[in-house]
Image 1 (cartoon, one colour):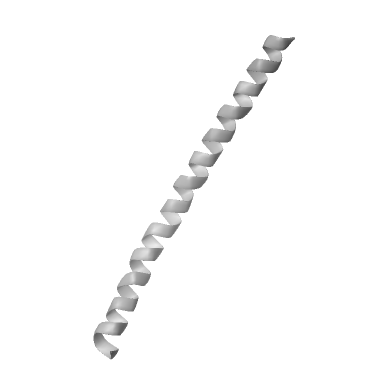
Image 2 (image 1 turned 180 degrees about the horizontal axis):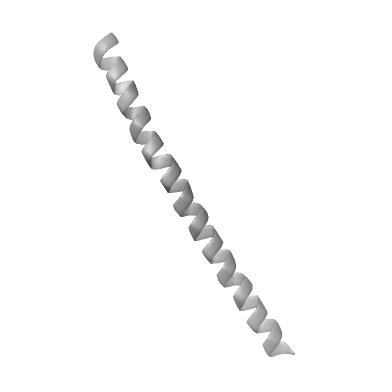
Length: 50
């Protein structure tokens, strides 16, 4: 019974780590291009209108 509990606990921990890695990856895919685009837009605004 302890072996089953330990195995289940290990699977839950591995799944949690995978989920957190996928969340981080998706966050980076969303934030990095947005930051680059917004940075370029603000640079263009300050370059032409400041």
